[in-house]
Length: 242
Ligand code: F6R
Image 1 (tube, rainbow, N blue to C red):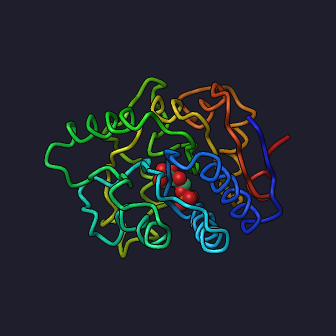
Image 2: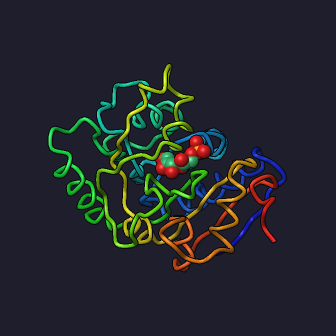
């Protein structure tokens, strides 16, 4: 895995946005794999700035998000669909119909997971997948114990993930306990992966991902088997590396 250590979150956001913008410039019909959460907010802000200043054209691109909460419709303000609209899609020329986020409110969740996986395959697979990392080493919502061969499915969130995400809700009781998430196999099938981590709370998970054994107990460590991963971390998230 290629490691880039940046001086701070701002620098991390700029470098990550540049990678994505270059990919779209080189290949206008890129299939983007996108993440939500706190970490990529700065990257999306920078990407919007690059789009505005340099005219990077997203009109032929498409996107697939990693995950969505079960039970929330795209209209729910805390849904990942709403997050993506606010933080990126409302500000660039990626056609809305080419953006994909799992439908967390689907009546048949199993069928929705299958549909999502098939839609990724029909698009030719993901060219560049953006990931964050959970304090417990999760990627997407593949919590510790997630097997290497998993595909898009309904997952149970751990209490540590529910607590970490409670900051976006009024009360912890409102945080959904399940999500639809791409699986480890789905993620590993992406041609390129860019993982972002910022802050000291991520230091231990980053250390295990890069220097620990490959184990489902720390799902991010399974990325070691992928041939093209760039890990961009700020100094705080890099603090436990040897
Ligand atoms: C988000 C996702 C999660 C987050 C992770 C880190 O789509 O799949 O794996 O990337 O929980 O979240 P933040 O960035 O909020 O620390």
